[in-house]
Length: 428
Ligand code: ACO
Image (cartoon, rainbow, N blue to C red; front, side):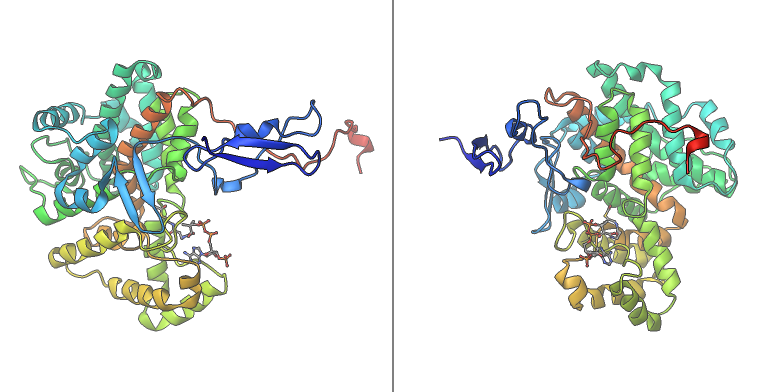
């Protein structure tokens, strides 16, 4: 027998059988609940989408209570250990791990799109010397829509694939361009003999040497960080990607919007905010006072808490291990001790324990990025690069889902009732 939910409307005494599928009822089924036939019908009110599934997805699974994260069914721990970013991006975008031949072809395809149009350089040159790289990143990605008007053809599967390749291939170059612009160094061309992250490091840090050789430990660490950040189901920026994309705008414009959502300090900007917080705390002896202020509601312990994870974020565990490997090469980040102490106190403190606040992906990633030589304001950009694969996979899934339409939430209007215009001289 099909599962149903029985709802009794006390206003009318009527009963309704609402079908249950996947532990969910369809909000639209509630519309039949009404007192008079001319009413709109019952809606659900769910600010911040705390309890609303907006899509059916095959991409990423999270069990926030158990701390499980799977991409297309594969545990994040196994991907972080055995895979690399380009293979993982293939998995996210196309649903299966590639064969050897498919992976070679994918790398080849990405490598043939790593260059940026020269005009984009001029565009970035227009930014001020102290422009935030994330601002430059998201506007440059948006600007790409003017370079590739063919991307408007979102109904064509071949065109969608081409834009996926272009975006995955070009975002490291855009990020590097923004970085070199701030520090006043010439833009470096990609070196396609290097890995995805090796080439990114090359475009960021190459000076006058004939060939840039990335440090293998740092190259691998960045690759693992990229795997960990590649997708995270319906978070704020991914929901933005889907929402904007649902209007059938080109993916560059949609991705610029997703990157803007990521920029916020409650989302991808949190890794930068963690470092600012640690610098503000300044020393170990100030930690108890800081924790006291957080508990009094005078600020947040950045890098802690998550809408979905109510236990240790599995990505944070992997990053904490990576940090040790990176620090062996770069030397310890002096802020690490403070971070460890904050974590120790928070994991024992009733305030954090009762609210199930644990370190999230951003708590330790910033310390690694800083030790690797990245300035703080590059951190959200380092998040946006790998998330591009996730955004594009979610965009593709949304566009090919026959149930999806332009996203358009409802509201409960609480403003003034109908009233007549009052001329200016009669207003009080
Ligand atoms: N420090 C102190 N208290 C916190 C924190 C924190 N980091 N996070 C949540 N709380 C408290 C809230 O004050 C609230 O307490 P209350 O019930 O007494 O009012 C309770 O925990 C629940 O918090 P909400 O804000 O309702 O939780 P929500 O799911 O809306 O927020 C979020 C999740 C935004 C991640 C939040 O935990 C936060 O602001 N964390 C700090 C920023 C951060 O690290 N963001 C990165 C998230 S991961 C990512 O986007 C990649």
